[in-house]
Length: 468
Image 1: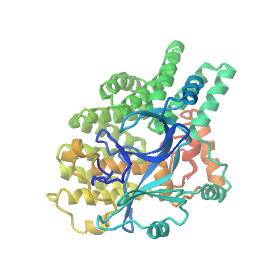
Image 2: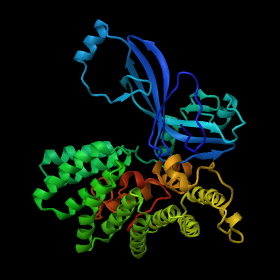
Image 3: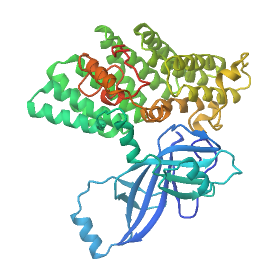
């Protein structure tokens, strides 16, 4: 097992490690108390390709903790409890054998932390100096700790109250409310859109399984109504679910007719998304030449539409595809274009991308460093990871890892937890409400939950409809 930066993982006695598929994820099981016929565990995991942050000699990644419990006996009380308890909680197979079920709410206010220098140690004073508001430190290994409570509820409330914005509503709650209202009113078209919205809220959390059934119901409803636009919307998102489930061939089956329909109806925004997801599917099939071709087509459309934010992401994807083909010079050229564009757009993650390029270049010394580029890129905040040629054996590449920095939570943190003013927020939402691409919950152009995206100062409308 490895840490997300490719280093060997060392854990303490009793900690279990879960085998993953080489995608950079890390899943650990921390033992807890044993009581009432149960062994309690904390399941701590990171998402695939989670970005590794490095600051002041500390490396850390965002993680999720899920409390769980494992039955330790078959006494009468346990038999009765198992008989009458509804099977509503998720369950897992433990690496050491046996199964367990979730026993409480998940926590997302935590980091896995280890020293940048392998010779350093992690002492409590050092961690508290870096995270003064932390609530708890739990040692996992000789140089690995879990830091909990790194974003307090009061901080989040203060961030929202600083501009008098309404408290954020979770996307899933927003979509579920829209679905209930649509069904109550009997509006079948609105119900189909709400089903897709709810599915997308799962996809945003990288949880594709529940999204599939919702999207299949939406697709069936759209087919019965003869509603091509909603059918296209459901199909595009089914392809996204297939990609998350590592089914690229199935994604391609969904995407080819969707691309044809988008072109037939001159829906350039959906054509761009379909091309991007086709490229991702070909990348997952290790057909990197096809990936480059589709990414380049999507890139051309993004430029023609003036969607600079998507253009930057597509440039980075093209760079990754060139890196997979061993074309380091082309990968760096596209990466530099992406960084320059992100800086021009004022994106808080621009420097993280630039520093990934520094590390990638260091791993590919055959590429010549242009005069003055050292100052342009600055110093790396990322720890070294294996070269792309060893990707299958060692996890995500440096360039792929950078993509996760664009997640809303990461960029929100990168902007210093700032939000726009109330007037700006209202003006942005008014523009969304009047737009034909707004579903009532999300934007069909970028897939974002509009009420969340409109809060962030570094975000913009892909169709340039927000007031400047």
